[in-house]
Image (cartoon, rainbow, N blue to C red):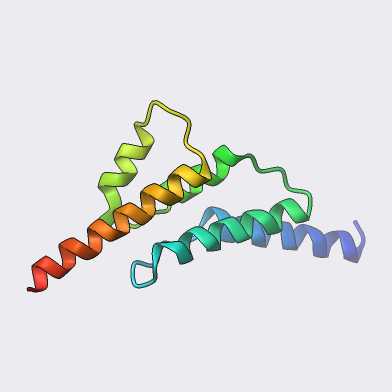
Length: 107
């Protein structure tokens, strides 16, 4: 393995770690979480790593913060195809619900 191959391999490992370990920061909008994961998926595909939509959806669901356990459980039990677009819409709706609940608790 020459230096360029090592560099590429290290890049692959680093991107995979970032992708599969992406953290959901609840202080940021959920769209930032979704974009972070999908951007990393695009980078991985760009260097030749094969990711299907199901793998991306899995990371979106499984790395959600624990406070989002209800939607996480619902999504993992879903009996229908979950696309990135479906998940995005559901997570945006869940974020609205979280904001509404939070504003009622502080009122």
